[in-house]
Image 1 (cartoon, rainbow, N blue to C red):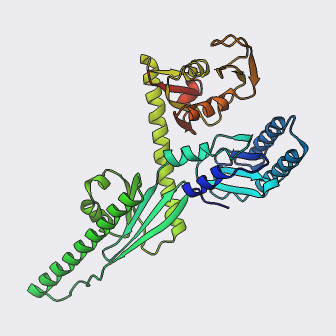
Image 2 (cartoon, rainbow, N blue to C red):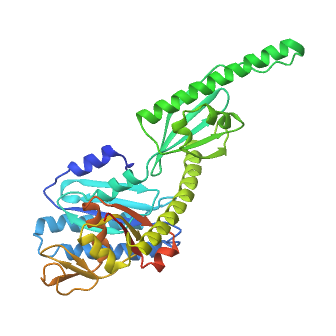
Image 3 (cartoon, rainbow, N blue to C red):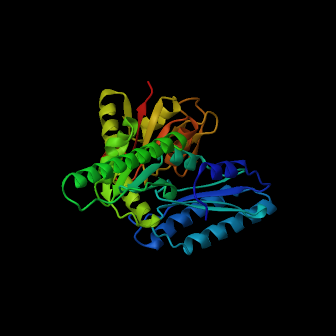
Length: 372
């Protein structure tokens, strides 16, 4: 199993075997598919799509693809999904390529045969869902974590020797307390400097402050103003907490924030459509995409629909027929929504896959904010 990072994407994108690469994306989210058999049905549909793409293929590459499909089917059948919500699988059996990437987010289901691995969806995920930093701190120690798409790394520890509080009374106790407080503040300053250096060097878009007492709350006052704007929440955790528990808590927080961001994005779409700076529904969205007017595309994770694609100019439509752009006869496609998403990626649009928002259903399951 591989973890998703940019070096892995570069390696996959650079691989150019002499047989086709089978790329498959599949949602296995337990909230969407409580039973394993439910996402297995969707897998079978995707594998049938690949076999359709094999029509006319020579014998040697066809054997490689058939082995790809067998291995993919076996992997998904035996999957222990845990908290995995999406899979990205890449195989070229005739050239020895096999990569499996587990994701903490659902993905748009897709299967594709091509000379190279189809990694655009992973690139978009990395660009859209930036890293979260968790700063776990008390008055003597801090542990800094980076988390992106479910991958966690404990990147740094910060230690300072802070004396304990004094039990004497009077002025001696006051001097000792000031001494302790001074050491604590210097420790928090060191942690703040480490956080700022991490932000400049590695980058993160969200900051979770955690700890067993008040230190992580005081840390917020010590960090740079840029970082204070990134603080999303504060949670209580012991300093000895395991890395897996940090990851689990951070993902819970990220998912709650993402649901809110999805809801806000759909509300923005509805408001834009009301004044003509956005479109909703399949027909209007496909027309805007064909005209190059789409800035942001919003689409329900489960949205699928048959349609037409013009072989001449590439225009998409909800129903095959004469192309509205060039007049040529359109070819039928089994899922015009998936083709639209791929076209949007190719045009440099931001694509927001909405997992849980019923308002988008009422808007037709798909829509776009327009450039002009």
